[in-house]
Length: 392
Image (cartoon, rainbow, N blue to C red):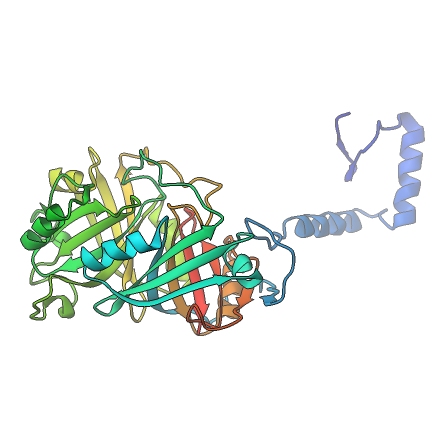
C-alpha cells in the first residue's frame, strides 16, 4: 500500500472517504490539539528537526566499553581544540619486520619504539573488533613514521591496479640532499618504480619550478616520494649542509575530489593553515605521477609543527576511483595521520557538529601510554582519508 500525505498527516492505511473521513479527521485533530494551522505547522517543523539530527555512530559499531567517552555534538564549532602539530604519518603493513628493514636500510630511518597492544580500548579506537596490533615508530630527521601490523584480523592487500589519481592514494615525501645519488641508491636496492624516473618540474610552473621528485613503492605497494628542493624553495632546514642522503619528511600528500570541500575539513574544522598553492601540468608531471594528461591543483596545509598535508586534486583526468566503502584499519591501503590537539573532546564535538564520520566509537581514553597519547579518536575526511586526533 502506498503512503500519501493529506492534511499534514501520513496515511498508514487506506483513507476513509467523503464526509465520514472529514468528520473523523476533525475529531482526531481536536483531540490532539491540532485544529489550528499554526499548531500543525509547528508540529511539522518539530518532526523535521528531529528526523534530520544525525546519529553518532562508528563505521564498525561496537558495544559500549570501559574507556569509551560518550560525545555529544555541540551546535556550533568551539573556538578551542585546533590541531597544533602533525605528529606522525602512519600506514598499515603486512609484515612489520620486513617493512622496518626496508625503511631503516633503504631510507635510513631509525627505530624509536616497538609495541604490541590488544584490548577493548584499541578495538574502539580503530573501529575493529578482535584486533591485536604491533606498532613500530620510526624517525628520520625530526619527523616520524608509524608502521602498524595487524596480527589479527588480517586485512586486504593494496589493489594491484592502484593509480596515483585514485582517491585512496597517499604518500610521504622524503627529502634528499642529492637526487642523483638517491635515485642510484634506490635502483641498487631494486625498489618498485611508480614514476618513469626522477622529474624536474619546469620553470613554467613557478611555485614548483626546479623541484626534482621521484615516486616509488615500499614492499606492500605504498607510494613514497623522494624530493629535492631548489635553493629558493622548501624549509630552511632542508638546505643545511649535511652528509646524510635522506633528511626527513616534508609532507604527506593525499588525493582529494574537491579542494574546497577538503578545506572545510582541514582548514575550517581542524584549524590547519594554507601554506601554498600550485597548478601542475605538463609531461614532467605526467611522468612523475604516471598518469597521462595529469593536471593537478595542489594545496599545501600546515600546523604549527610537523610535516605538512598536501592536497592533490586531479583536474584531469577525472577518472580516479573513490576509496572502497568497506576499507578498514587493517587493510593495506589504510593510512592514518596523527594530529595533536590540546582538547580532543572539543575537537570531536567540532567534527561531529560538522557531520564528519568517526571511525572510532567515540573519544577513547587509552589504558596506558603504549601509543604515546592519553586519549584520541579516528575520523574520516570527505574522501575517506583517516586522521587520528590525539591528546597527550
